[in-house]
Image 1 (spheres, rainbow, N blue to C red):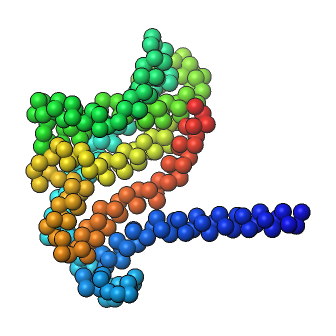
Image 2 (image 1 turned 180 degrees about the horizontal axis):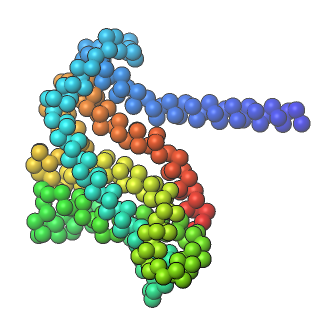
Image 3 (image 1 turned 90 degrees about the vertical axis):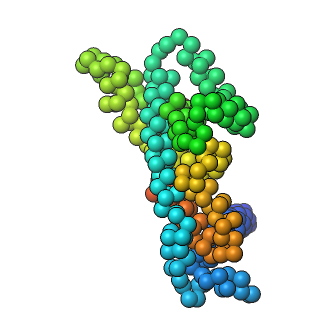
Length: 280
């Protein structure tokens, strides 16, 4: 019995050591970016490597903001992200409500077709979608980056919200109907408040996806004044290739909102997905 406990302890210890090493290796590029953003250029290339900036300078951040027009790119990205979150949350929740709570002919077949669209690689539709937007005059505008969010909000988001809504007792709908509430009022007054956890998860996934999106802006935006942060970072590598400390500072500015959003909402991500999976 004692030997079995020792083996279990050693096994758990080795697993934790392995996970700590993996986490450190995954975190190392982020740590390198942060330390480099506070360093002078000559200190970045010192051998042996110095991990603590000495002296610690904020000049890289001020230069990244004033010289590269980062504020303009951040403003463009915030606009695109906000419009996407609004459209995704609204239309995905409405579609999920229709699939989860309403009875209509062909509902299950349509839901299966919706899920099957998730198996279609985005590279397959990239060219025909681009041609379509080109004929509609959407090139070099934000419409291709925003409008799709108002056309259902994405199959995965609909699936996630539907799984949660299916777990809400139907007696609430029946009681509201007896009191004279219609489908729209039931949706906004009962379903949406009870689905808040999953809606937060959808909003966070949308934020992460749109904020870090590179391919969409690369395809549809031609004017530099309309660039988002993902495209601006790529252009900085060509314009400031000799000033990697400035590029690291700009990268830190771009990454910071994602880190903050993840830290603030990680409980919602884990809880919302777990509850949706259980109730489905």
